[in-house]
Length: 292
Length: 269
Image 1: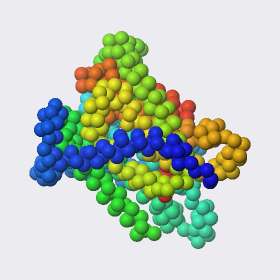
Image 2 (image 1 turned 120 degrees about the vertical axis):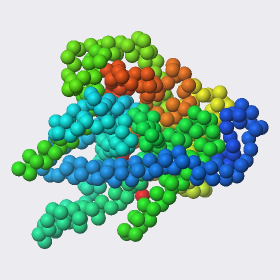
Image 3 (image 1 turned 180 degrees about the vertical axis):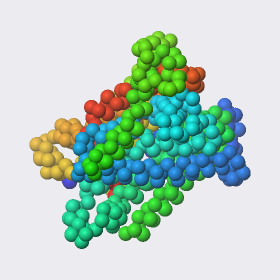
Image 4 (image 1 turned 135 degrees about the horizontal axis):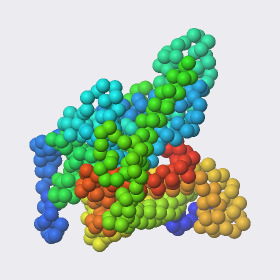
């Protein structure tokens, strides 16, 4: 294209790009700097009290038991809820993609509904569903002979409860991506396999799964990034309890930064989260390369 | 036989995804305490609107509703304008460093928003914007995913169309407004629903920057209400209905565009 007047380009790019630079890139750099300072509630009032303390915040994190607890909880959540979500999404996509299925769009709509709804609101709904005495979950489990469980009050069950909610809320999103992936697999592959007499399981293992590999990697990266940012569910349902068993990294960052105003310390927690997400993404990209 | 089994499983999953919503709606029409019984009630024994009256009269949830609605609309309109201009420029103009800039933006999508929250809060505090609408509008002015989505779509618009308009004497802004924007309608609809729902549903950021009850968005007001009403499922369910219902209406109306957006976003590489 001709007539690339630089002024015109700047006119189109400037609003969005400058907004992103000022309100995204500069804060990222500022957060990095703040994480090497003792920025706290006194600094908020008087900036001259700010001191650079090198890696002190980071070394303090290493000895902070609560931080390790939040790290452990978040990993528990990501490692269990992530694969579980993806497995449920893929299963639902396979069911909906079957040639035998009727009312596809209706089922798809029902499965997708939790995705668009407000997380805080559904977390509140589930908090009552999990109620040990009156909750409908224990009622249904009682019908098949399972004794009532104190879902959110029992340190063992609290995190699984949040995982169940997360899978219920999110599986529809990846399901849509998987359906698109399934529809891109050429029918001839299955027809050829039919001629060779392959079983349904063999077709799934040797055609569907390999053909879906790029989709699966994409889905697992976005799921992992999202799940590492766990916050609203424990905030609404358990406040991090019982016994800190559901305290997440982001919740700990929020508490340190915005409740106790230990902003230097909180910034270092945010950066650890970033590094974890970054490494997790790199690992998955590497897996993708190896598969190719 | 296979068909019956398949549909039994499908219906079973649909029941699981829908029951929480049905129970929520049902309990919101119950009197105090009527949802806290064993065995649970799935249909109100006596129908009442008292929970909704309480929400709107005593707890002024109408103000929170307005905050959520106005903010979601404002952020949607402004970011759509900013993102579409930038996305168009990234797709159709050639200048030095453009691709480098675009790649920088794309790779920074991996940085979680939480990293920016502390400095952003301080910036807004020094600007005097904490506890105002600006605190939510400013970080939502533009977003990288939106620019990316528009750019992908713009690339498929033929250059000849733009050239022809230019020969007819149209200037760049007129081309953008009269030719590009109308062609972008589907992707703008997609982005609009993503942004609207994203802003409406957002929790952590409004929780940080809004400090007065009257400035809370619905999710923050709801989470706050929960602290005082842990034993009032009926009231909390009414609050959840008020929060979720607009989202479901918007989604049902623009479903097609939403699903398309997910698939467009997933063909990144």
